[in-house]
Image (cartoon, rainbow, N blue to C red; front, side):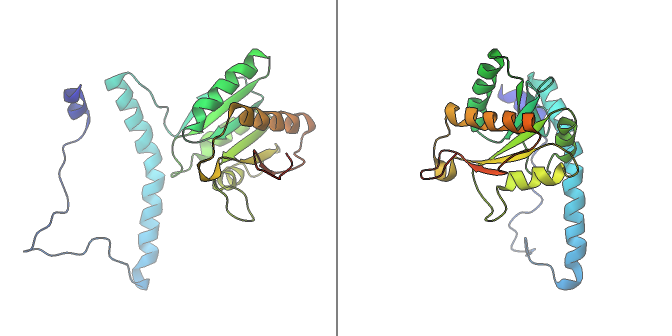
Amino acid sequence: SSDEVREFLPPYEPKVILDTKNPMDIGSFSPPEYIQEVRYQNERSMQNAKKVIKEVTKEFASYFGRDYYGLIEEYRCDDADVVLVTTGTVTGTAREVVDEMRQEGKKVGLVKLRFYRPFPKEELQKIGEHVNAIGVYDRSISFGSGGPLFIETRSALYGYSIPILNFLAGLGGRDVTKRDIRKMFDYIIKAASEGKAKKEIIWIGTRGVEE
C-alpha cells in the first residue's frame, strides 16, 4: 500500500532549494588542484554503495516480501556448468530458454546484473569458480574491444582459466529471440567442452555475418 511505501522510504528533505537570498552553484566543475580528491571521493562512495545496496535490498524484502538479490540475480546457477550473463528485459526470455535446456539435461544457468555500477566483481568471481565457461550478452559495442559488459566481466575474471565469450545482439532495439539465446548457450557449451573459444566476440542474428 502507499502507507507501507511511505513508511519504508526516508522522509524527503531537499538539500538544495531555489533561494534567491542564498544563491549557489550546483554541479559546478572542480579546478585542477581539487579534481583528484573529488574523484577519490567518488570512487569511495561507489565502493560503499555495494554495502548499502545489499542492506537496502534486505530491508525492502522484510517490508514487501520480495527479494531482489542485491547486485546480481542468479537463476539455476547452483549446479550449472555454463552461464550466460545478461541485463535488462532480455533476461525474461533467457530464463525460458534456460528452463527448456534444463529439461533437455543441459546444465545451463543465468546471471542477471542488476547494477552496472558498482560492478559486481566479487559476485561474478564466485560464479567463475565453479563453471566451465561464461557467455556475456551485450546490445552495444565498444569498437575494437567488444561489448562494455563483456569488457568489465573479462576484467573481473582475469586469471580464471575458463572461456569467456561475448555475444552481440539486439543493437538498435532489434528483437532477441529464444532461438538467438539458444545459439548463445550452444556456443558456451561448446567452448566449455573444448576448453577454449574459437571466436571470442560473436554477432548473433546479423545479416551477412556467418555465425
